[in-house]
Image (tube, rainbow, N blue to C red):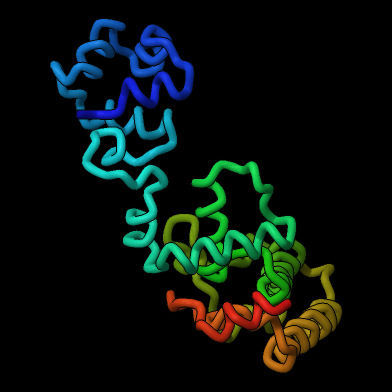
Length: 229
């Protein structure tokens, strides 16, 4: 037996309101709840989104209301690892204890995948930003579009010629190549220094995969060490 009625009553939702959300009649909701009519696949998904639980749970095929097995299968992290990371994020005030559990899990997976807003990623973002800034200065301030060879374009993408791109021949006549080179040298030095800092600094080692983004579990020692803080 499915759990549509159970979830609806648990969330204090009327059949009429649920029917309006799903775009069906109230009678259809009654038939779904009694098991006299099978909802379409997209209707099951809408119910899952509405109640924030897996389809299998609504259908009565699983007792896993959170969907841990689905998260484990999709991410490669076991429940203990994800719950541990959720707790770490709460301790760092990155999550509120009353946040939706699905949002908490998603945030934890983001950090486990090394996609969170960490010190390491802040430095990496700065390095990428410098590279983007260098290209922006070069292309938008110095390059004269009238000097570009049309054959170097494929659609809106321009392929750079290594010999002429930075020799000044494509620059506006009133722009100074030495100034461009000075800007580039200063920015490149900063980018290199940030790279050196990334290699030398001892970042948070809570994750064994902090630098290697392959999905591996937290070590027992890492969990034990963190618990002792």
